[in-house]
Image 1 (cartoon, rainbow, N blue to C red):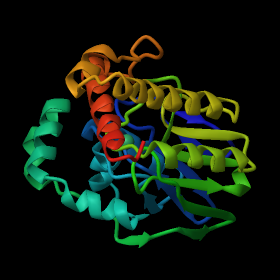
Image 2: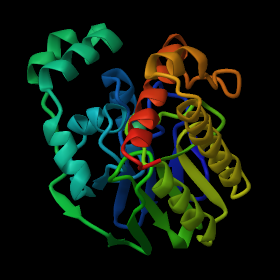
Image 3: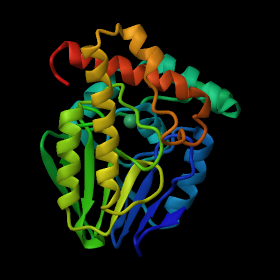
Image 4: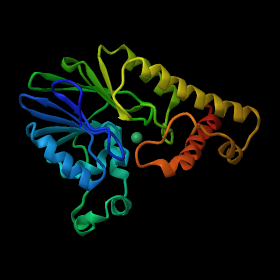
Length: 274
Ligand SMILES: [Zn+2]
């Protein structure tokens, strides 16, 4: 567990997203949850030492951010689009995934449910807990409903998956134009630390590198379209695997990820949205 400020903690070592939390005088506010049940249970032990969990905020609707919600008794807050996307998730598919990631949990799988956010917003909202303010800001990019959680008193922001710090980026639902705008917005926040959805905690300087990676992905697909490559040809020829490693535990998925990223951007290009 990394302690970023006196009250801010983030775990960057799990397979899946980086869950984090902020300690206040009134209790704890969590940002996302570990996806593997045994990680979620171990993490819960740590979090509870810092106080009662009051709110749990989901930054986006991917399984590695919300699967662990089930293990936390707290009011769950997210963008309306995140709630809608999570409510479309298949419980059966999720249980299959849990079985693969954590075979030891199988005897308890019958009781597992998807815990949906019950408080939602569209543009932004503020939660006031103790002396801290939690500004939830809709910043589309990695997903359409991606959300940042800015805590001005701590000079930090949880960015969700709009930042992958020096690990491969997932573009399978990306909106690259909006993503670049969101990174510009994040750059202007008065913070010392950016807590990314994946990879280590970083400083403002990394945001340009993240933007450059997205731009390079976009230009590689624009080139491919210009040259008349089919989707299959583009998927065979385009790979950015040499630039960064995969996130922890995801090494075997590298080639598949490149293909997913190409497919998404190729489809956006065909729609004139790249
Ligand atoms: Zn994600």
